[in-house]
Length: 264
Image 1 (cartoon, rainbow, N blue to C red):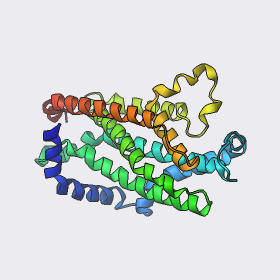
Image 2 (image 1 turned 90 degrees about the vertical axis):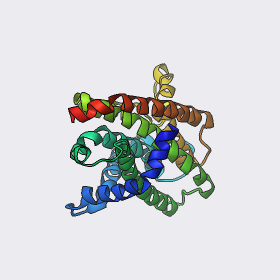
Image 3 (image 1 turned 180 degrees about the vertical axis):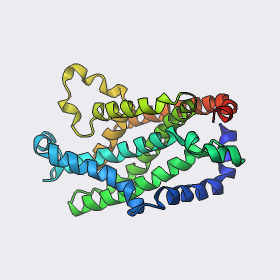
Image 4 (image 1 turned 60 degrees about the horizontal axis):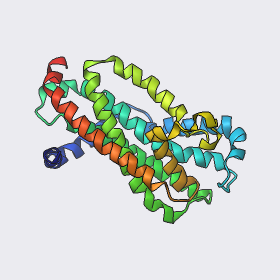
């Protein structure tokens, strides 16, 4: 693992330039350019706010604001959007860059880092817009923002480890990409993003803690929507899980690296 980190550090300028090129390539022929990174999550917030706000606003005690549901939804969508964007980009990254892999000699393991960097930039832009909106709605608690770097780091680690495992396996099992679109949809509705956790039937509430995204999204809700500290033990558990998955991801990648070149 230390050797890997050292290699990534040695190739840091390549990673940075590749992130810039990835952003330019994704939006070079797009009329709205980088705004598309924001359109999808913001459109989801608008749709769910218009449809569910009247139903769920009364079920959000603790948020003293007439736009309580929109604030709750945006807070949860920040963590969810960062996670899903990284996983979806990593899922097909080795296939997407197969031509470069065959023609250019560079550490292939940098590819998940590059697309994660692109997703991170989009997340930062979305976060800034969300914080500005919260400030305009008089719902910004500056002292609580110290938690955001920690929440972001935990989400990045968890998403990258999952994405790298799936991206490696997807080279050999292409159906995995289609399957994950269904799994992510199920995860979205099983994670309290558009609804508060306390309205989940008691008979299945015990399942929520087994979903790592529940702890991530809840932490964003606590910090941004409820102006309280997140559950540190839950975040620590997700961090430890992310470390274990990261080691597993590197192991799987190294075992499959030589065969990936033949398959691609």
